[in-house]
Length: 115
Image (tube, rainbow, N blue to C red):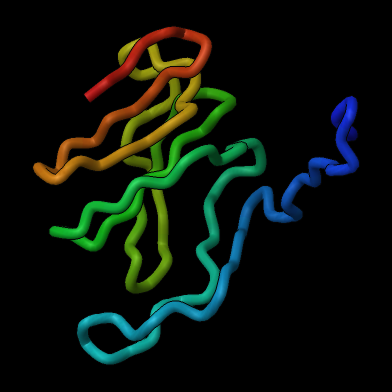
């Protein structure tokens, strides 16, 4: 996809179900963190990641149906946390965990935010 007046083009990352990045630094116990985090579901379309330092949990939202997954930063495993459509969430376009540990979810086109 090209943008008018620009030589840049957008590319979709080839990781609908599993993404990897640079090797992570060791966890507090000294063991290295996984270099790959596999997310369950063929139609998740993950959008945004939030990290809760106190628990070591990460949260990923689905742009398609609003479900929220919670995973372990240490072992990479992720599973259901909030079901699709819960509280009227039809999309999760952004996730943030604040300093108090609260999870904020932006509902994209719904115009709503959940805490």
